[in-house]
Image (cartoon, rainbow, N blue to C red):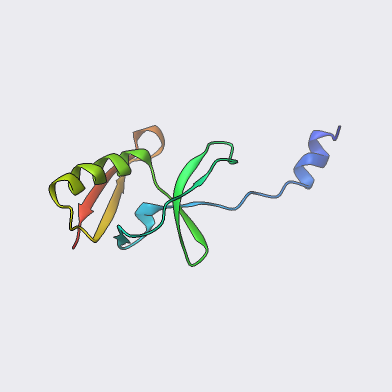
Length: 94
């Protein structure tokens, strides 16, 4: 068992996962993957070997939009707030 000091010195931060709201636009044809081994499992898309997490509220909003417009090809996600007050708005583009 290592001490707290030794653990801190040897600590390597796990790779940071970006958010889908960081992208200028998102194709509805991207493959969704799931990281089930993370401390908090999440769904994501991968672009140029960079992971972008997809919050479940984005999927819910996108589902509602796709029910009205099955031909949607691209959308954008706007993120507002911080922490527990974070809100996502899905904006259809094309």
